[in-house]
Amino acid sequence: MKITVFGGAGFLGSHVCDKLSETGHAVTLFDRANSPWLRPDQTMIVGDILDEAAVGKACAGAEVIYNFAGIADIGEAEVNPVDTARYNILGNTIILEAARRAHAARFIFASSLYVYSKAGGFYRCSKQSCELYIENYRMAYNLPYTILRYGSLYGPRADRRNAIYRFVREALERGRIEYFGLPTALREYIHVEDAALCSVEVLAPEYADSNIVLTGAIPMRVGDLLKMIAEMLGKDIKFDFLGDGKSGHYEITPYSFNPHIGKKMIPRLSTDLGQGLLRVIEDLHRELNPNLTTEMGYLVKKD
Ligand SMILES: NC(=O)c1ccc[n+]([C@@H]2O[C@H](COP(=O)([O-])OP(=O)(O)OC[C@H]3O[C@@H](n4cnc5c(N)ncnc54)[C@H](O)[C@@H]3O)[C@@H](O)[C@H]2O)c1
Image 1: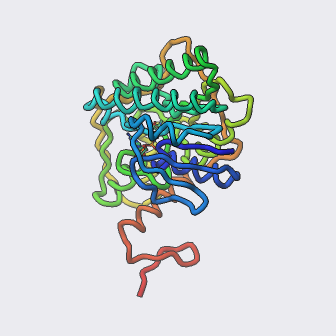
Image 2: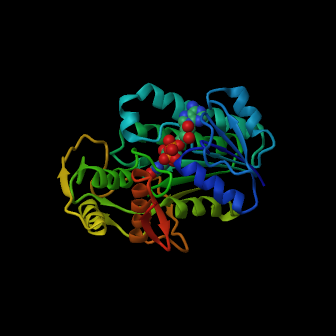
Image 3: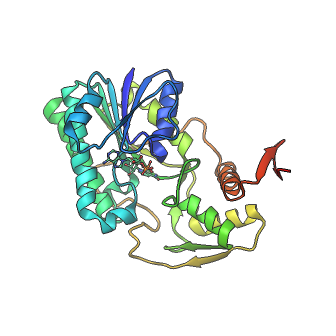
């Protein structure tokens, strides 16, 4: 199928583009940054989602349209409410309108577990608004959709905005990890490649017009996760739990009572958290020590 992916150069979007191309789809990425992970069989369009003409052109002829573009960080959204409305809400509506005009068979949106929680601040407001617009485009214009409510992702291509990346980096660089919440905070981490695979599987007809929750299968306390990282590194790591109730993040559950329930999707095969963490550690170790190389599975110094 011909598929256009907005935000396809980002952390999650780039992995979804990889999986779509591996499945044989013709993928066009639209992003304001060139993708460092662009494959030779993919097409790149550099542009802004607020540019209606460019978005319309990128959607023409596309059967499926994904949107991963916008402000993805809760902290950034909290201090930029106007930009959050502009890029997340207006930007998504511009893409929805282009999808309707292109008679797309499916519009797929990256929402969040925070969408109907009390946590998440302006980020949550933007996701809630997008979900309402998408549902209304279905009612008003018959545009089929799938909303994916992602949980806490981790894995390759993440940056400092990603919790696990930051934990491992701080542990390696400073021997100390700072966490803005409490050690009892619960998370269900999901590896980005598992999430990306599920994001492609939802192209199946049974996922049309549904809201899907995509998180890891096993809840874990942040305090235990940090201990796990320290054990894997074999180092004495200090933890600073700041217990900041205003960080915008939830403690035990992102859910609060509301009628917009999503169905949970469990990946058929999933990356074990321990294995996934080891890979994050290895990637970061290599990034911080470019003089090391891998031989037979071991990191060794180049001569
Ligand atoms: N990473 C997570 O843990 C997570 C969890 C839940 C939901 N999500 C959602 O998934 C989506 C992708 O998240 P991510 O972590 O990959 O973020 P990211 O910042 O890595 O990717 C976003 C991409 O959108 C592009 N972009 C931003 N504004 C743009 C604009 N105006 N025009 C064109 N391109 C623009 C950026 O250049 C970037 O490549 C977001 O909607 C985010 O809210 C992410």
